Length: 546
View (cartoon, rainbow, N blue to C red):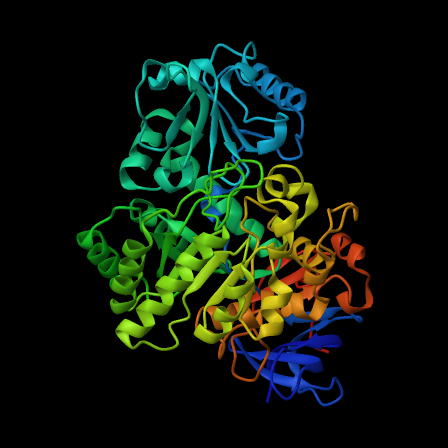
Protein backbone atom coordinates (compact mmCIF):
# COMPACT_ATOMS: atom_id res chain seq x y z
CA UNK A 1 0.00 0.00 0.00
CA UNK A 2 1.32 3.41 -0.99
CA UNK A 3 0.06 6.28 1.17
CA UNK A 4 -0.61 9.73 -0.20
CA UNK A 5 0.78 11.38 2.94
CA UNK A 6 2.44 10.06 6.09
CA UNK A 7 2.67 12.09 9.30
CA UNK A 8 5.35 10.45 11.42
CA UNK A 9 7.81 10.98 14.22
CA UNK A 10 5.57 12.52 16.84
CA UNK A 11 2.69 11.85 19.19
CA UNK A 12 -0.69 11.08 17.62
CA UNK A 13 -3.69 11.35 19.96
CA UNK A 14 -6.38 9.49 18.10
CA UNK A 15 -9.36 9.51 20.53
CA UNK A 16 -10.32 6.21 18.90
CA UNK A 17 -11.37 3.12 20.82
CA UNK A 18 -8.63 0.55 21.27
CA UNK A 19 -5.75 2.62 19.94
CA UNK A 20 -5.75 5.98 21.74
CA UNK A 21 -2.17 6.82 20.73
CA UNK A 22 0.05 6.21 17.72
CA UNK A 23 3.40 7.37 16.33
CA UNK A 24 2.27 7.84 12.75
CA UNK A 25 -0.87 8.43 10.74
CA UNK A 26 -1.27 7.81 7.02
CA UNK A 27 -3.74 9.27 4.55
CA UNK A 28 -4.99 7.86 1.26
CA UNK A 29 -7.74 9.40 -0.89
CA UNK A 30 -8.72 11.79 1.87
CA UNK A 31 -9.28 9.19 4.60
CA UNK A 32 -7.17 7.69 7.38
CA UNK A 33 -5.55 4.54 6.02
CA UNK A 34 -2.80 3.86 8.57
CA UNK A 35 -2.34 4.27 12.32
CA UNK A 36 0.54 2.70 14.17
CA UNK A 37 4.25 2.81 14.77
CA UNK A 38 6.63 4.84 12.68
CA UNK A 39 8.68 1.74 11.92
CA UNK A 40 5.74 -0.16 10.44
CA UNK A 41 4.33 2.69 8.36
CA UNK A 42 3.96 2.02 4.60
CA UNK A 43 5.78 4.10 2.03
CA UNK A 44 4.20 7.45 1.13
CA UNK A 45 4.32 9.87 -1.76
CA UNK A 46 4.97 12.66 0.75
CA UNK A 47 5.97 12.69 4.38
CA UNK A 48 5.49 15.25 7.11
CA UNK A 49 8.18 14.81 9.76
CA UNK A 50 6.59 15.72 13.06
CA UNK A 51 9.81 16.07 15.08
CA UNK A 52 7.99 15.31 18.30
CA UNK A 53 4.95 17.49 17.65
CA UNK A 54 1.40 16.46 18.50
CA UNK A 55 -1.25 15.41 16.00
CA UNK A 56 -4.92 15.39 17.01
CA UNK A 57 -8.21 15.12 15.17
CA UNK A 58 -9.29 18.41 13.63
CA UNK A 59 -11.03 20.82 15.96
CA UNK A 60 -14.83 20.90 15.74
CA UNK A 61 -16.04 24.33 16.83
CA UNK A 62 -19.69 23.66 17.63
CA UNK A 63 -20.82 27.29 17.97
CA UNK A 64 -18.95 29.89 15.93
CA UNK A 65 -20.65 32.97 14.45
CA UNK A 66 -18.78 33.14 11.16
CA UNK A 67 -21.06 35.94 10.00
CA UNK A 68 -19.95 38.14 12.90
CA UNK A 69 -16.26 38.23 11.99
CA UNK A 70 -14.22 41.40 12.14
CA UNK A 71 -15.05 44.30 9.83
CA UNK A 72 -12.16 46.51 8.70
CA UNK A 73 -14.47 49.52 8.57
CA UNK A 74 -15.50 49.17 12.22
CA UNK A 75 -13.43 49.79 15.33
CA UNK A 76 -12.87 46.93 17.77
CA UNK A 77 -13.47 47.70 21.43
CA UNK A 78 -11.96 44.40 22.55
CA UNK A 79 -10.00 45.05 25.73
CA UNK A 80 -11.49 48.53 26.22
CA UNK A 81 -12.55 48.33 29.86
CA UNK A 82 -13.09 52.03 30.56
CA UNK A 83 -15.29 54.68 29.02
CA UNK A 84 -12.23 56.82 28.39
CA UNK A 85 -10.68 54.08 26.27
CA UNK A 86 -13.92 53.53 24.35
CA UNK A 87 -14.14 57.23 23.60
CA UNK A 88 -10.51 57.40 22.54
CA UNK A 89 -10.81 54.53 20.05
CA UNK A 90 -14.05 55.80 18.55
CA UNK A 91 -12.74 59.36 18.27
CA UNK A 92 -9.56 58.22 16.51
CA UNK A 93 -11.58 56.05 14.12
CA UNK A 94 -13.93 58.94 13.32
CA UNK A 95 -11.00 61.22 12.54
CA UNK A 96 -9.22 58.59 10.45
CA UNK A 97 -12.33 57.68 8.42
CA UNK A 98 -14.14 60.84 7.28
CA UNK A 99 -15.59 58.78 4.40
CA UNK A 100 -17.87 56.74 6.67
CA UNK A 101 -21.45 57.91 7.11
CA UNK A 102 -21.84 55.86 10.29
CA UNK A 103 -19.14 55.19 12.89
CA UNK A 104 -19.53 51.55 13.92
CA UNK A 105 -17.80 49.72 16.75
CA UNK A 106 -17.94 46.18 18.13
CA UNK A 107 -17.17 44.17 21.28
CA UNK A 108 -18.15 46.67 23.97
CA UNK A 109 -18.41 45.24 27.50
CA UNK A 110 -21.41 45.97 29.69
CA UNK A 111 -19.30 47.10 32.63
CA UNK A 112 -17.56 49.93 30.77
CA UNK A 113 -19.48 52.34 33.02
CA UNK A 114 -19.66 51.49 36.72
CA UNK A 115 -23.04 50.88 38.30
CA UNK A 116 -25.25 51.37 35.23
CA UNK A 117 -25.62 50.66 31.56
CA UNK A 118 -23.91 52.96 29.05
CA UNK A 119 -26.08 55.63 27.42
CA UNK A 120 -26.01 58.14 24.58
CA UNK A 121 -24.62 60.91 26.79
CA UNK A 122 -21.47 58.83 27.27
CA UNK A 123 -20.75 59.23 23.53
CA UNK A 124 -21.41 62.97 23.33
CA UNK A 125 -18.86 65.19 21.58
CA UNK A 126 -17.03 62.46 19.64
CA UNK A 127 -18.48 63.12 16.19
CA UNK A 128 -21.53 64.64 14.50
CA UNK A 129 -22.13 61.34 12.70
CA UNK A 130 -24.27 58.48 14.07
CA UNK A 131 -22.44 55.98 16.28
CA UNK A 132 -23.57 52.34 16.40
CA UNK A 133 -21.88 49.99 18.89
CA UNK A 134 -22.59 46.29 19.49
CA UNK A 135 -21.74 44.58 22.77
CA UNK A 136 -19.31 41.68 22.81
CA UNK A 137 -22.20 39.17 22.98
CA UNK A 138 -24.21 40.86 20.19
CA UNK A 139 -27.29 41.07 22.39
CA UNK A 140 -27.29 44.83 22.97
CA UNK A 141 -26.54 48.00 20.99
CA UNK A 142 -25.29 51.39 22.19
CA UNK A 143 -26.19 54.51 20.17
CA UNK A 144 -25.30 58.18 20.33
CA UNK A 145 -27.80 61.03 19.95
CA UNK A 146 -27.18 61.37 16.21
CA UNK A 147 -27.92 57.66 15.67
CA UNK A 148 -31.15 57.85 17.66
CA UNK A 149 -32.18 60.87 15.62
CA UNK A 150 -31.38 59.16 12.32
CA UNK A 151 -33.41 56.12 13.36
CA UNK A 152 -36.30 58.12 14.81
CA UNK A 153 -35.85 56.57 18.25
CA UNK A 154 -35.57 59.97 19.93
CA UNK A 155 -39.03 60.83 18.59
CA UNK A 156 -40.64 57.74 20.08
CA UNK A 157 -40.18 55.52 17.05
CA UNK A 158 -39.53 51.78 17.18
CA UNK A 159 -36.97 49.77 15.25
CA UNK A 160 -37.27 46.29 13.76
CA UNK A 161 -33.98 45.02 15.17
CA UNK A 162 -34.30 45.60 18.91
CA UNK A 163 -36.07 47.23 21.82
CA UNK A 164 -34.92 50.79 22.61
CA UNK A 165 -34.60 51.34 26.34
CA UNK A 166 -36.40 54.40 27.71
CA UNK A 167 -36.00 56.08 31.07
CA UNK A 168 -38.73 56.11 33.68
CA UNK A 169 -39.46 59.83 33.38
CA UNK A 170 -41.28 60.58 30.17
CA UNK A 171 -39.99 57.71 28.11
CA UNK A 172 -36.81 59.41 26.88
CA UNK A 173 -34.63 57.03 24.87
CA UNK A 174 -31.35 56.28 26.63
CA UNK A 175 -29.35 55.10 23.64
CA UNK A 176 -29.33 51.49 24.82
CA UNK A 177 -31.09 48.79 22.76
CA UNK A 178 -31.79 45.28 24.08
CA UNK A 179 -32.83 42.02 22.37
CA UNK A 180 -30.69 42.98 19.41
CA UNK A 181 -29.46 39.70 18.01
CA UNK A 182 -32.74 37.80 18.31
CA UNK A 183 -34.52 40.63 16.47
CA UNK A 184 -31.79 41.56 14.00
CA UNK A 185 -31.61 38.14 12.40
CA UNK A 186 -35.28 38.02 11.44
CA UNK A 187 -36.15 38.87 7.85
CA UNK A 188 -37.80 42.13 8.94
CA UNK A 189 -34.99 43.01 11.34
CA UNK A 190 -32.27 42.31 8.79
CA UNK A 191 -34.04 44.43 6.18
CA UNK A 192 -34.19 47.27 8.70
CA UNK A 193 -30.51 46.98 9.52
CA UNK A 194 -29.42 46.79 5.91
CA UNK A 195 -31.52 49.84 5.12
CA UNK A 196 -29.90 52.02 7.76
CA UNK A 197 -26.65 50.57 9.16
CA UNK A 198 -23.85 50.13 6.56
CA UNK A 199 -22.18 47.53 8.77
CA UNK A 200 -24.90 45.06 7.73
CA UNK A 201 -24.79 45.40 3.96
CA UNK A 202 -24.66 41.99 2.21
CA UNK A 203 -21.18 42.66 0.82
CA UNK A 204 -19.75 43.57 4.22
CA UNK A 205 -21.44 40.54 5.76
CA UNK A 206 -19.80 38.36 3.11
CA UNK A 207 -16.41 39.90 3.82
CA UNK A 208 -16.85 39.00 7.48
CA UNK A 209 -17.82 35.44 6.58
CA UNK A 210 -14.80 34.70 4.41
CA UNK A 211 -12.46 36.39 6.88
CA UNK A 212 -13.80 34.11 9.63
CA UNK A 213 -13.46 31.05 7.40
CA UNK A 214 -9.82 31.87 6.73
CA UNK A 215 -9.26 32.31 10.45
CA UNK A 216 -10.85 28.95 11.24
CA UNK A 217 -8.37 27.13 9.03
CA UNK A 218 -5.46 28.96 10.66
CA UNK A 219 -6.60 27.83 14.10
CA UNK A 220 -6.87 24.13 13.31
CA UNK A 221 -10.66 24.14 13.03
CA UNK A 222 -11.70 21.58 10.45
CA UNK A 223 -15.46 21.71 11.11
CA UNK A 224 -17.23 24.87 12.19
CA UNK A 225 -20.90 25.29 13.12
CA UNK A 226 -22.41 28.66 12.17
CA UNK A 227 -25.26 28.63 14.68
CA UNK A 228 -27.53 31.36 13.39
CA UNK A 229 -27.96 31.86 9.65
CA UNK A 230 -31.14 33.70 8.64
CA UNK A 231 -32.92 32.15 5.67
CA UNK A 232 -32.39 35.50 3.93
CA UNK A 233 -28.59 35.07 4.21
CA UNK A 234 -28.20 31.48 3.09
CA UNK A 235 -27.03 32.84 -0.25
CA UNK A 236 -23.88 34.11 1.50
CA UNK A 237 -23.06 30.56 2.56
CA UNK A 238 -23.78 29.21 -0.92
CA UNK A 239 -21.54 31.90 -2.40
CA UNK A 240 -18.66 31.01 -0.08
CA UNK A 241 -19.00 27.34 -1.03
CA UNK A 242 -19.19 28.13 -4.77
CA UNK A 243 -16.13 30.39 -4.56
CA UNK A 244 -14.22 27.68 -2.65
CA UNK A 245 -13.74 29.90 0.38
CA UNK A 246 -14.76 27.09 2.74
CA UNK A 247 -11.49 25.44 3.58
CA UNK A 248 -13.08 23.91 6.68
CA UNK A 249 -16.35 22.01 6.73
CA UNK A 250 -19.32 24.21 7.66
CA UNK A 251 -22.58 23.22 9.32
CA UNK A 252 -25.14 26.03 9.10
CA UNK A 253 -27.94 26.17 11.65
CA UNK A 254 -30.95 28.11 10.41
CA UNK A 255 -32.39 30.73 12.73
CA UNK A 256 -36.04 30.33 13.77
CA UNK A 257 -37.30 33.76 14.94
CA UNK A 258 -39.72 34.07 17.83
CA UNK A 259 -43.23 34.13 16.42
CA UNK A 260 -42.38 32.45 13.11
CA UNK A 261 -45.26 30.30 11.89
CA UNK A 262 -45.74 26.86 10.37
CA UNK A 263 -45.16 28.24 6.87
CA UNK A 264 -41.73 29.46 7.95
CA UNK A 265 -40.90 26.01 9.31
CA UNK A 266 -41.93 24.49 5.99
CA UNK A 267 -39.57 26.98 4.30
CA UNK A 268 -36.75 25.72 6.53
CA UNK A 269 -37.59 22.11 5.68
CA UNK A 270 -37.55 22.95 1.97
CA UNK A 271 -34.25 24.82 2.24
CA UNK A 272 -32.59 21.91 4.01
CA UNK A 273 -34.03 19.30 1.67
CA UNK A 274 -32.93 21.29 -1.37
CA UNK A 275 -29.59 22.27 0.16
CA UNK A 276 -26.14 20.98 -0.75
CA UNK A 277 -25.54 17.26 -0.45
CA UNK A 278 -21.84 17.30 -1.33
CA UNK A 279 -18.94 19.65 -0.71
CA UNK A 280 -18.11 21.26 2.60
CA UNK A 281 -21.42 22.99 3.39
CA UNK A 282 -24.22 21.23 5.24
CA UNK A 283 -27.56 22.61 6.45
CA UNK A 284 -29.81 21.18 9.08
CA UNK A 285 -30.02 22.27 12.71
CA UNK A 286 -32.53 24.92 13.79
CA UNK A 287 -31.44 27.69 16.16
CA UNK A 288 -33.84 28.68 18.95
CA UNK A 289 -33.70 30.95 21.99
CA UNK A 290 -35.06 29.82 25.34
CA UNK A 291 -34.02 33.11 26.97
CA UNK A 292 -31.63 36.04 26.45
CA UNK A 293 -28.42 36.85 28.39
CA UNK A 294 -27.50 37.44 32.01
CA UNK A 295 -25.52 40.68 31.69
CA UNK A 296 -28.50 42.99 30.94
CA UNK A 297 -30.75 40.99 33.33
CA UNK A 298 -32.73 39.46 30.42
CA UNK A 299 -31.87 35.77 30.90
CA UNK A 300 -34.53 33.71 32.67
CA UNK A 301 -33.51 32.90 36.27
CA UNK A 302 -35.23 30.61 38.76
CA UNK A 303 -34.65 33.18 41.52
CA UNK A 304 -34.23 36.95 41.55
CA UNK A 305 -31.09 38.54 40.18
CA UNK A 306 -28.83 39.21 43.13
CA UNK A 307 -28.66 42.96 42.45
CA UNK A 308 -32.22 43.37 41.10
CA UNK A 309 -34.71 42.17 43.72
CA UNK A 310 -37.98 41.17 42.11
CA UNK A 311 -36.45 40.72 38.65
CA UNK A 312 -35.88 37.25 37.20
CA UNK A 313 -35.98 37.84 33.46
CA UNK A 314 -38.27 35.71 31.37
CA UNK A 315 -38.17 32.93 28.81
CA UNK A 316 -38.32 34.02 25.18
CA UNK A 317 -41.66 32.22 24.84
CA UNK A 318 -44.02 30.94 27.50
CA UNK A 319 -42.72 27.46 28.38
CA UNK A 320 -45.77 25.66 26.98
CA UNK A 321 -45.39 27.47 23.64
CA UNK A 322 -41.68 26.78 23.52
CA UNK A 323 -42.30 23.11 24.23
CA UNK A 324 -44.86 22.92 21.43
CA UNK A 325 -42.36 24.52 19.03
CA UNK A 326 -39.59 22.06 19.88
CA UNK A 327 -42.03 19.16 19.58
CA UNK A 328 -43.07 20.32 16.11
CA UNK A 329 -39.48 20.76 14.92
CA UNK A 330 -38.52 17.37 16.34
CA UNK A 331 -41.49 15.80 14.55
CA UNK A 332 -40.26 17.38 11.30
CA UNK A 333 -36.89 15.69 11.77
CA UNK A 334 -34.91 18.68 12.97
CA UNK A 335 -32.21 18.77 15.59
CA UNK A 336 -32.50 21.97 17.63
CA UNK A 337 -29.64 24.14 18.83
CA UNK A 338 -31.11 26.20 21.68
CA UNK A 339 -29.54 29.21 23.37
CA UNK A 340 -30.13 29.11 27.14
CA UNK A 341 -28.03 30.95 29.75
CA UNK A 342 -30.11 31.40 32.90
CA UNK A 343 -30.98 28.40 35.07
CA UNK A 344 -34.68 28.86 34.29
CA UNK A 345 -33.91 29.19 30.58
CA UNK A 346 -31.91 25.94 30.68
CA UNK A 347 -34.79 24.20 32.47
CA UNK A 348 -37.29 25.44 29.88
CA UNK A 349 -35.08 23.98 27.11
CA UNK A 350 -34.61 20.67 28.94
CA UNK A 351 -38.35 20.35 29.60
CA UNK A 352 -39.17 21.06 25.95
CA UNK A 353 -36.67 18.58 24.53
CA UNK A 354 -37.76 15.80 26.88
CA UNK A 355 -41.42 16.48 26.08
CA UNK A 356 -40.70 16.35 22.35
CA UNK A 357 -38.97 12.98 22.63
CA UNK A 358 -41.83 11.57 24.70
CA UNK A 359 -44.51 12.89 22.36
CA UNK A 360 -42.82 11.93 19.09
CA UNK A 361 -41.16 8.73 20.35
CA UNK A 362 -37.90 9.95 18.81
CA UNK A 363 -34.54 8.66 19.98
CA UNK A 364 -30.98 9.83 19.46
CA UNK A 365 -31.94 13.22 18.02
CA UNK A 366 -29.07 14.81 19.96
CA UNK A 367 -30.70 18.18 20.49
CA UNK A 368 -28.27 20.74 21.85
CA UNK A 369 -28.46 23.44 24.52
CA UNK A 370 -25.95 26.22 24.00
CA UNK A 371 -24.04 28.14 26.71
CA UNK A 372 -25.61 26.58 29.86
CA UNK A 373 -24.06 29.39 31.87
CA UNK A 374 -26.08 28.82 35.04
CA UNK A 375 -27.25 25.28 35.77
CA UNK A 376 -29.44 24.27 38.71
CA UNK A 377 -28.09 21.13 40.41
CA UNK A 378 -31.42 19.32 39.92
CA UNK A 379 -31.11 19.70 36.15
CA UNK A 380 -27.52 18.52 35.72
CA UNK A 381 -28.32 14.76 35.43
CA UNK A 382 -30.93 15.40 32.74
CA UNK A 383 -28.33 16.03 30.00
CA UNK A 384 -26.94 12.50 30.25
CA UNK A 385 -30.31 10.91 30.83
CA UNK A 386 -31.90 12.52 27.77
CA UNK A 387 -28.88 12.48 25.46
CA UNK A 388 -28.85 16.27 25.21
CA UNK A 389 -25.62 17.95 24.11
CA UNK A 390 -24.27 20.80 26.23
CA UNK A 391 -22.53 23.07 23.71
CA UNK A 392 -20.37 25.20 26.00
CA UNK A 393 -17.71 27.88 25.69
CA UNK A 394 -14.99 27.64 28.36
CA UNK A 395 -13.61 31.08 27.56
CA UNK A 396 -16.91 32.63 28.67
CA UNK A 397 -16.22 31.75 32.30
CA UNK A 398 -12.91 33.61 32.40
CA UNK A 399 -12.93 36.21 35.19
CA UNK A 400 -11.68 38.94 32.87
CA UNK A 401 -14.99 38.59 30.99
CA UNK A 402 -17.49 37.88 33.78
CA UNK A 403 -16.09 39.71 36.81
CA UNK A 404 -18.36 42.57 37.62
CA UNK A 405 -21.57 42.40 35.64
CA UNK A 406 -22.16 38.62 35.31
CA UNK A 407 -20.88 37.71 38.75
CA UNK A 408 -22.76 40.52 40.46
CA UNK A 409 -26.00 39.83 38.61
CA UNK A 410 -26.01 36.14 39.49
CA UNK A 411 -24.64 36.56 43.01
CA UNK A 412 -21.91 34.63 44.78
CA UNK A 413 -24.31 32.09 46.27
CA UNK A 414 -24.98 30.81 42.71
CA UNK A 415 -21.43 30.89 41.35
CA UNK A 416 -21.20 27.15 41.87
CA UNK A 417 -23.81 26.82 39.07
CA UNK A 418 -21.59 28.61 36.55
CA UNK A 419 -20.35 26.77 33.44
CA UNK A 420 -20.41 23.33 35.04
CA UNK A 421 -18.71 21.48 32.21
CA UNK A 422 -16.55 19.30 34.46
CA UNK A 423 -19.58 18.19 36.46
CA UNK A 424 -21.47 17.47 33.23
CA UNK A 425 -18.60 15.45 31.78
CA UNK A 426 -18.27 13.44 35.00
CA UNK A 427 -22.01 12.72 34.90
CA UNK A 428 -21.60 11.11 31.47
CA UNK A 429 -23.17 13.97 29.50
CA UNK A 430 -21.89 14.95 26.08
CA UNK A 431 -20.15 18.32 26.32
CA UNK A 432 -19.00 19.88 23.04
CA UNK A 433 -16.69 22.87 23.37
CA UNK A 434 -16.74 25.90 21.08
CA UNK A 435 -15.56 29.48 20.82
CA UNK A 436 -18.76 31.48 20.25
CA UNK A 437 -16.62 33.66 18.01
CA UNK A 438 -16.81 36.66 17.92
CA UNK A 439 -17.99 36.75 21.54
CA UNK A 440 -14.79 34.92 22.46
CA UNK A 441 -11.51 34.35 20.67
CA UNK A 442 -11.74 31.74 17.92
CA UNK A 443 -8.42 30.10 18.85
CA UNK A 444 -9.30 26.71 20.43
CA UNK A 445 -6.12 26.83 22.50
CA UNK A 446 -7.57 29.85 24.32
CA UNK A 447 -10.63 27.70 25.06
CA UNK A 448 -8.50 24.76 26.19
CA UNK A 449 -6.46 27.01 28.48
CA UNK A 450 -9.65 28.52 29.94
CA UNK A 451 -11.15 25.08 30.53
CA UNK A 452 -8.01 23.97 32.35
CA UNK A 453 -7.60 27.07 34.52
CA UNK A 454 -10.91 28.99 34.89
CA UNK A 455 -8.56 32.01 34.94
CA UNK A 456 -8.03 35.14 32.89
CA UNK A 457 -5.56 35.04 30.04
CA UNK A 458 -2.88 36.53 32.30
CA UNK A 459 -3.32 33.62 34.73
CA UNK A 460 -4.87 35.73 37.48
CA UNK A 461 -8.14 35.44 39.38
CA UNK A 462 -9.05 31.80 38.82
CA UNK A 463 -12.48 30.94 40.21
CA UNK A 464 -14.77 27.93 40.70
CA UNK A 465 -11.76 25.58 40.39
CA UNK A 466 -13.84 22.42 40.87
CA UNK A 467 -15.09 22.84 37.29
CA UNK A 468 -11.62 22.78 35.72
CA UNK A 469 -10.78 19.91 33.35
CA UNK A 470 -7.54 18.44 32.10
CA UNK A 471 -5.97 18.89 28.67
CA UNK A 472 -7.19 15.53 27.39
CA UNK A 473 -10.78 16.20 28.46
CA UNK A 474 -10.70 19.63 26.84
CA UNK A 475 -9.34 18.32 23.55
CA UNK A 476 -11.89 15.50 23.56
CA UNK A 477 -14.68 18.09 23.99
CA UNK A 478 -13.33 19.94 20.93
CA UNK A 479 -13.05 16.80 18.79
CA UNK A 480 -14.76 13.51 19.61
CA UNK A 481 -17.62 15.08 21.57
CA UNK A 482 -18.16 17.66 18.84
CA UNK A 483 -18.43 14.94 16.21
CA UNK A 484 -20.95 13.01 18.31
CA UNK A 485 -23.05 16.16 18.72
CA UNK A 486 -23.53 16.34 14.94
CA UNK A 487 -24.01 12.60 14.26
CA UNK A 488 -20.56 12.43 12.67
CA UNK A 489 -18.64 10.24 15.14
CA UNK A 490 -17.86 7.60 12.51
CA UNK A 491 -16.16 10.03 10.17
CA UNK A 492 -14.96 13.01 12.22
CA UNK A 493 -13.62 13.78 15.68
CA UNK A 494 -11.24 10.84 16.00
CA UNK A 495 -8.42 9.36 13.97
CA UNK A 496 -9.48 5.87 12.99
CA UNK A 497 -9.11 3.78 9.88
CA UNK A 498 -11.70 4.87 7.32
CA UNK A 499 -12.46 8.20 8.98
CA UNK A 500 -12.03 11.43 7.07
CA UNK A 501 -8.50 12.74 7.26
CA UNK A 502 -9.28 15.91 9.22
CA UNK A 503 -6.39 16.57 11.56
CA UNK A 504 -4.13 19.18 13.12
CA UNK A 505 -0.36 19.23 13.63
CA UNK A 506 0.31 21.45 16.64
CA UNK A 507 3.52 23.43 17.07
CA UNK A 508 4.63 21.26 20.01
CA UNK A 509 3.40 18.28 21.97
CA UNK A 510 0.73 20.04 24.03
CA UNK A 511 0.80 17.23 26.60
CA UNK A 512 4.35 18.26 27.57
CA UNK A 513 3.31 21.83 28.43
CA UNK A 514 1.80 23.70 31.34
CA UNK A 515 -1.58 25.33 30.79
CA UNK A 516 -0.14 28.84 30.46
CA UNK A 517 2.27 27.68 27.75
CA UNK A 518 -0.61 26.64 25.50
CA UNK A 519 -1.30 30.30 24.69
CA UNK A 520 2.06 30.47 22.90
CA UNK A 521 1.28 27.53 20.63
CA UNK A 522 -0.43 27.34 17.24
CA UNK A 523 -1.70 25.01 14.57
CA UNK A 524 1.28 24.36 12.26
CA UNK A 525 -0.78 22.36 9.77
CA UNK A 526 -4.53 22.04 9.30
CA UNK A 527 -5.66 19.14 7.13
CA UNK A 528 -9.23 18.67 5.83
CA UNK A 529 -10.02 15.54 3.87
CA UNK A 530 -6.31 14.92 3.38
CA UNK A 531 -5.73 18.38 1.92
CA UNK A 532 -3.45 20.79 3.78
CA UNK A 533 -5.53 23.96 4.03
CA UNK A 534 -3.23 25.86 6.39
CA UNK A 535 0.54 25.69 6.67
CA UNK A 536 2.13 28.04 9.20
CA UNK A 537 5.68 26.92 8.44
CA UNK A 538 5.55 26.31 4.66
CA UNK A 539 6.68 22.75 5.34
CA UNK A 540 4.02 21.16 3.15
CA UNK A 541 5.66 22.57 0.05
CA UNK A 542 8.95 21.02 1.01
CA UNK A 543 7.97 17.52 2.10
CA UNK A 544 8.96 14.64 -0.09
CA UNK A 545 9.06 10.90 -0.11
CA UNK A 546 10.88 9.55 2.92
